[in-house]
Amino acid sequence: MKKVDLRSDTVTLPTEKMRLAMAAAPVGDDVYGEDPSINKLEETIAAACGMEAALFTASGTMGNQVAIMAHVDRGDELICEDEAHIFYYEVAGIAALSGAQARPIKGDRGILTPELIAPYIRPTTDIHQPYTRLICLENTHNRAGGTCYSLKQLQEIRVLAEKSGAAVHMDGARVMNAVVATGDKLSAICDCVDSISICISKGLGAPVGAVVAGTKDFISKARRMRKRLGGGMRQAGVLAAAGLIAFNEMVDCLAEDHRRAKVLARGCNDIGFDIDPDSVETNILVVKTADPAKVVASLKENGVFANQFGPDKFRLVTHYNVDDEGVEYTLETLKKIKTAM
View 1 (cartoon, rainbow, N blue to C red):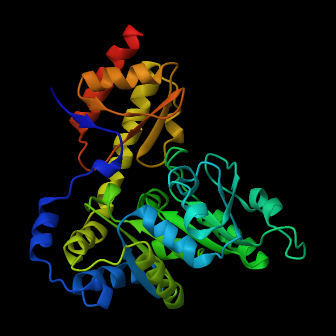
View 2 (cartoon, rainbow, N blue to C red; view 1 turned 90 degrees about the horizontal axis):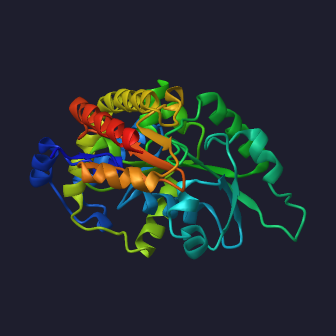
């Protein structure tokens, strides 16, 4: 039986070139700043972002949380979209680690605008209210189906943040998908934020890790926060070596992931599932159906793995290890399932 794993791009396997690079990576103690492979990865991504410095972290979640810890004080408030990863999937890290309060706002398919954000920025003159210290954006937005911010939207949010005295952090776990989908340069996106966390795993294929970028002072503070969480790694250059290949050589592959997601979306629509193919911007599609648990279970019986995504949805995510044959097999299987429902 053919296996097609569409649960997430987190299941992407490292390439043979990555594995060889990991075996040959020059390493040192990163807590002392002596791992040449990690230093190179951080310098490479900081330069691509147009930012002063960067920090390697064990995961995107750690990257987001050390960034938030570096931006806010206990009792502060941050604004985020109401299904943002930092709010939905990071185990209440905002409260537990930063002692801050999250103010979730419903976005337009996961996307926040200045008009949505502005009413929730707290007045600094009222001693009863917390300070709005941070605005967090997710690009692309996972639970909204891989939606992207336009550069204009980001620039407008940046203006609002500067006026209100808030910083802007981007959960850019899949920001390279946004770069490919929109054609915007990573440095242009990063010019609109104070910090960003970028996964080198997921669609880029490295086995582990994310990188946070920002100013030198910010990264110095984030490095201390990473150490507090037990994230000070030693000879971790074996991971950075794969990350360098992922960041330098795998971005162009994301366009194929996007194309295959569109094929899946059109096929699901043709079969009779509820999805607008035009809504699929990157590599994530969220499909509506009356009984997603049954669909996911039936897919699994046929070697296709997907995730239920709520009471009336399931999610499919394309990535490097899903080819055209896998997409075709998935659609054939879904057609059989739909006919039997």
